[in-house]
Image (cartoon, rainbow, N blue to C red; front, side, top):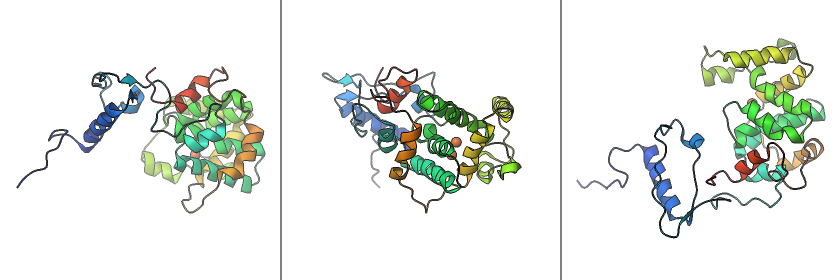
Length: 259
Ligand SMILES: [Fe+2]
Ligand SMILES: [Fe+2]
């Protein structure tokens, strides 16, 4: 029996082969995109790193937009990121949470917080997403909104019966019945309990929990007004306003540039 030759070698796993094919594909572009260590950590030993084949004559490293991603406008607005950079499943989760908050009659600020609460999961970094998400939007929203998003990271692991928030069933499935949040999460929870904005953050959790419905589809257009009222769009565009987080938006826009 003839065996089809595996170009990646006989002992490679599917993911190793996929990586090699992607690497080959990158090598065919004029500008070679880079993968930051964070993209491959856990799959590639960070102490070894990625071995990149040498550039071919005339080929350069990518320093700007990645042609494999949808092009962003010159002055990107928050809605451009929702449409062109965030994962669509994540966007739907944000929209459904905001929709529920609005249906439940929560104030506009809470609806906005729900609409933004998992922006890091949807488009940036999942680990410690509450902190990353809060930081990303901090210069552009009311302090109460970013505070609530930062602390929902911790609050979601702790029930509050006064508002009918139990420990999420889904977390037992996701993390195991014996999962205990780390001390820094516990510490943040204790801080939040004493804070004047505790309930705003808690309301994110309340509207978060029941909002994973694959049969409901909410449109971004329905919430443009909420973003318009609660997110101060910089005139220069996100990434170009010189704010302390401008680089985070640029990284989201151009995630594969070399430096
Ligand atoms: Fe979250
Ligand atoms: Fe969420």
